Amino acid sequence: MAAVASGVVSCGRSDGERIATPRPRAYPRIEVAESDYRRGDSLPSGFAVSSRAEAVLGGSGDNRWLTIVYPDYGGARLHLTFTVSDDPDAVSANRIERIALNAGQASLSASDTTVGGGMASITFFRCDEPSVTPLQMIARCGTLTVSGALTGLDSEASPDSLGPLLDAIERDFAAGMDSTAIHSSVLWRGR
Image (cartoon, rainbow, N blue to C red):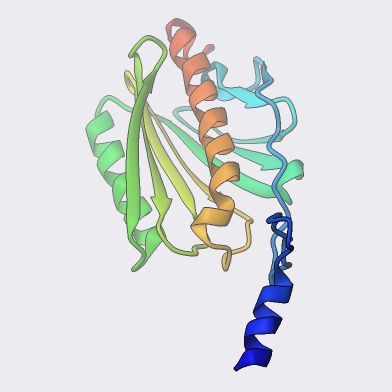
């Protein structure tokens, strides 16, 4: 017993300063990109994208999609769908169902916000356990519904370890929707 006690005491220092002990499994700290955005005429609805991300466009007419690739975040991909409809409630209901299916049996935490002076509403859904889609979202701005899911991260990573990255992507999406709401008078130019 005395040997165990002396071993425990020797782990500390006599001057009271603590020494960090490495954990058996550690995760690198995620460097979060700065909030610097670009908006291009080719991006749907004037949506702004992080200047450190790559934008890949697809679709046409009232249904377009945008995949935002984040090289700084290990190639994580935010898949967004832009849908203009005279019945945005039906589109939103369909997207909420898709979000639930993507989550499977995992529980979700939801948080709401508005941007663009209240013109656009956003709901973010975070998985409360490891998931292939740790972050999903849906936003409405008039007849436009934007929905999305984040993929390409370690599906075994705990939500806590992904927290800073998910915060940054939520910030980026909100900035994109803010840009969309501000430019809502010119949505879907050339339509």
